[in-house]
Structure formats: C-alpha cells, structure tokens
Length: 501
Image (cartoon, rainbow, N blue to C red):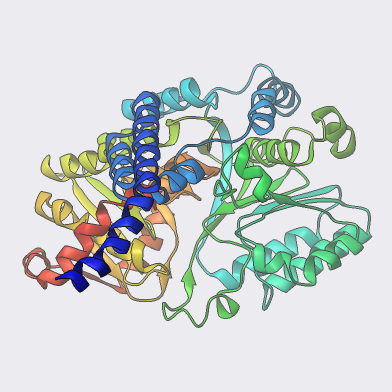
C-alpha cells in the first residue's frame, strides 16, 4: 500500500498543477461560446445557419470559434464596403451614358402578371430594371463557345471586358488568350478580371505574364492574404462570367474560361457540361456595367477615367426579348436573388425545370419547390450524378427525400458534371446565369443572373433541357427511401453542416 501511495502522490500533484490551466481553458471556452453565440443571435442569420454555427462553436473548443471568426460572417472589409457603396452614384452616371432617356419601356401587357411583379421586385431590391430589345443565342457546346468568344474578340475594335471565376490553360481556352493578345496589339483596350482563388493554379503559370506583356490590363479579383483575415473573409469569391466586346456583344452563363478536355480530367466525374448565351441589344449595357463596377472595386480606377478610356455608347436595341440583369453578392443586393428565385417558383402554373450542379437550398426555396409540386406543377430538377466534392454530394442528397415525397422529379445526369445554372417557368420566363442553387451562391459569391421574359428563349432552353434529360435517369422515390441506412445517415449528418459549405 505504501508503494502504491508513493507512486500516486506525484500524479495527484501533477494533476493539481494542471488544474488552473484546465480551469482557465474552460473559462475562456465558455466566454467565447457566450460571446460568439450572442453575436450570432444578434446578427440574425437564417435559422439553419445560426444553429449550425452555435453547435460548432459549442462542441469544438477553440476550433469552432476560430472557424466562425474566419468564415462565419459576410465581412467584406471596410475598404470594399466603401467602394461598393460608392458604386451607386457611379452606376447612375454610367446608366445615364449607356441608357437613353426616356428609356424604351417594356410592354408588360404581353406578359403574365407574375412576370411583371417579378421585374418590379428586382427593380425595387436591386435597382435593376428590365430592358426591352435584346437578342439571345443559347449555346451548349463548350468548344463552339470558346471558338466564338475568340472570334468575337478578334473582331473587337475598341474594348474587350472579361471576368471569370476560373481560367485554366490548355485547349481552346488558349485561343481566347491568343485573341486577347492580338486585340491588345492592335490597340484594343482589354480589361481582364480573374478570381484570385478560383484561378489560383492559372495565376501561378506563365499565361498571366503573357497577357501583361501583350498590354492586357489584368487584375486578380478578391485577392487573399493573412492580413485580409483581420478585415474581411477570404472565401468571398467573384463567381461571375462575363465577356463584353465593343459594348455591342456580350457573353454570360455557367462556363468558366476552361476547355473541359483539359480541366480536372482526373477527378473521375467526366467533363464539365456548360452553356452560355451570346447577347446583343439593350442587355449588353447592364452586363458591361456589372463588369466595370467590379473593375472599379478591384482596381480603384474611377468611373470618369474608365469612361475617358473606353468611351462607351448605348447599344442599340435589337431582338424581342425583355431581360433583367441582377447583380448579387455581399454588400450589393442582400437577399434579392433568393427572393426572385422563390418568386419564380411560385409563379409557375404548369411546368418548372431547374438545373444546378449543387443543390443546397435555403429553407424558403425548398418550401417553394415542395409547394409547387403539391399544387400540381410539374417540377423537374436535373442534377449531375457525380460532383467534384464528396461533402457537397452527400449534403445535396439529404434534400432529396422531402422533395421526392412532395412530388418533385429528380433526374441525375450521366454525361459529366452538369454545371449549367438555369430555371424555366411555364415556357415564358427563364433564369440563366452563374448562380448555383446553394447557400454559397445565394449569400457569399458575387454572381450575375439574367431573368429573361421571352417565350422564344424559353423554347431554346427547353431544347437544351431535353438534351440533358435524354442522358439522365429519374430517381424512383421508393428505391431512394429504401437505400442503405449508412448512406441515409451520412447524408443527413452532412446536411447539418450544409449551411457552412
């Protein structure tokens, strides 16, 4: 007994020596939980997001608090916030130059009442009105898209404006680079923004130097650094894809500046499948204004200097489509995009088709989709069978159960990673752009979306959707509900952290 007591006393003494440290650590953890929980509550994020953060902060000492401080709030930094606020009067100046006074009004007598109220919602929340007189060409062949963008740049006479989330070297994407270099060499002003994180491998390669050597004005969007963590989030991203040539033609849609034959070929998900629209007419002006606004924020160049350099003019209306451009992102439009998407779903009377690579909907959107199916609307969602993130794949599939029970038909596309972001409503309203139906696109990314009030474009999009459906299989609700318990548990567990993905 003496020997036992003799060996236990040093252990007890050692533990007692650590008790103050343990107690202090627990006290700091409790103070962090109380302080950050109060901050979460007072900032009033969506309930699911708030609960996910409260659980993480409480359950993971220090790590949860660190994660919240890094990415828990949409902190954009004081300087960026000031620049974004300063864009409002500058956009008014740009609109005065690009849009005639008085503007040609949209004839809403041709449209259903829900479409008019949707346009009014966008005008009220985002300050963006629908414009009359645009022509849209929908293209779903990625090789054709890259070749035609390069051809348009080769015909440029005054300016080329380009912004993308990702640029990946190789294949036909290199033809776009060569066209930019040729344009700059003949005196065309070329302004290019590429996201600092999305294009990170490309930024480390030789092509940025090639562009700059050719005279292209190239900037990284939303650059990251340890110092920026003190003032704003490093994971806010410029997810827009826009090309504007001479203020007369523009491109936008889901496709990054990549050739799928050379992009993530070892990921085991097949080629990325995208679509873009080439537009002419009135809608070119708000697309150009969107890119120029991003340029002003990132470069610090004034609008007056830009106008002096570019001498932009109003694009003449052409075509019959009415289009509304909605810019969304932290510090720009709040929840405008989400509200307009939900309005689109409630506007459906007969048919609703949605495509997105990532489905992590806000609760209001999930409820709207279930309600549409319940009131007899044919609701079809076309999603890729495989995606490039295991966590996102499981989190997405956790939402299938409720949608399938409500009558939503979910089609899984087999031809690659279906990356097109689109919504078609009753063959007269479409949403087409860069935003996924996930919380990151709806709350954190800078996106651009076209709301197209046109039966002709709806017919074009319907044909694209039919091509996707032809290479898809529909999920059987009974088979899905009886999938292995392990899969259901993993899906549902990762759904808890889906607000943080």
